[in-house]
Image (cartoon, rainbow, N blue to C red; front, side, top):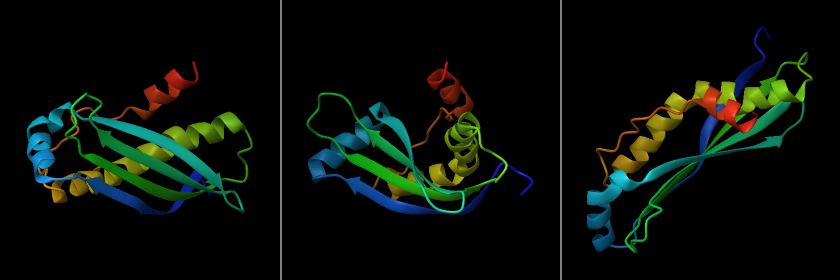
Length: 140
């Protein structure tokens, strides 16, 4: 394995779109620009240097309105880490940064398709997630 890791597979583990009624839908359609994208990354060790990396996206309104929709997706990636890599810091960077940069284009496309299929076709994430910067902020 020339690289530090290899993505063996990736898939949507769970996906949810919740809009409770038509009033909420109409309200959210006008105010979805106020929604924020949150990302959470968790891991589950498997055997033979494999790790399940779960990248969870939440798209929600943190405002005070009662009319809210909620969108969530858990995207799983199974990776195999090179046998030579033992340093915990390097493994953390692989999971929190390198894997994320590789899977994010597909993850974002799938999530935008969920929003579009839920009746919100014009949602775009203008700011791309800078995983290097997030990693640096977390560990500095």
